[in-house]
Length: 429
Image (cartoon, rainbow, N blue to C red; front, top):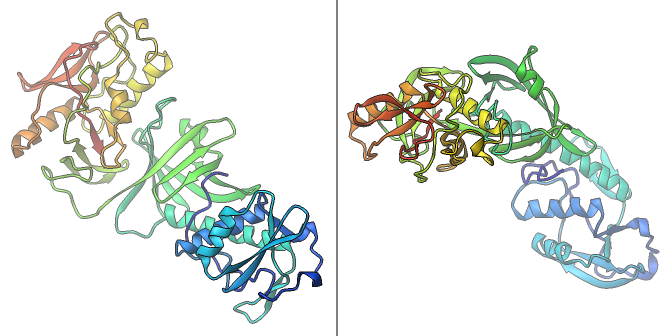
């Protein structure tokens, strides 16, 4: 498992841990066996190392050392080669980080502590220590994951599926909204589905079991035990046995209303407020500037792309996903001549999906009505964004797509391979 060991709040299952006793320890009094040692490449060594690292970062951990202690270092012949006087966690971390790969340390057993109920808890060997530490970390990792995914917050939070530049983007910006206790709403293409998330460990690896109601494209794509390759406060990277991958990112918006014409969360301009959240969003925001590339085409100018003729507010996302998926499915990005000699391999909707601004990665190409909304809002507030011709995500015909024409101040049509029209992203939040 990669990156799922969280530096966070862990249980204290051991409150006193001494390594081979006092400084006047006589190594002739104890015969060290190989199974007594904690070797550099062992799982137990790694767990202890991570535990000390968490302590140095002022996080609670599953094991706490009480200093000062002496740590004996052994070579491959089980001979003590050095005594280390350890006075704090930084000293311990230096020792663990710099220990030779062929050397080992050992712990004196039993380790005893008194639990809250008054009973004495005892660990008698390395195997018992590892088992208890792993159980503690699994429990607390799941607890931490639940805290991340089901936050108690005044903000409005959604887990949004992120853009995948190498794969299908049918679920781009489909979103999960936590209802707490593992229950979610899943918003996809204007559908609202019930869903659940359950974190669990399988063979020491953290998994996320996702279950979406019904029998549909969403259930076929999402209802798996996903291996959690990475998790932090805002991102979960998932992979299943078939090799499919999704990255979902938490985006939170203050419940304080955003005012149309004022700055949005990403630093752009708030264009629209529909008054309440539905389908995973309430507001529309336009980026503060165009994408810098000036040669972006709309896309393939010899074929119709299904379901990209949507024109209304809130429909730019559907167009954007279908544009991107069409060009991915026919390998257009690497072989644009399959469409036309005029196509250069660029697709405005793809570049918008790749766009990031102030850590926001949920951008789309606007529909016709959203283009008009951009113009009207910018014109009304006199914003610094100077408008010029920019692409709509709405297709017109086999050869043409819509763009906002600043001369007519309305949407108009242009050949899809045109390179003079700019690209201006928007986002729903």
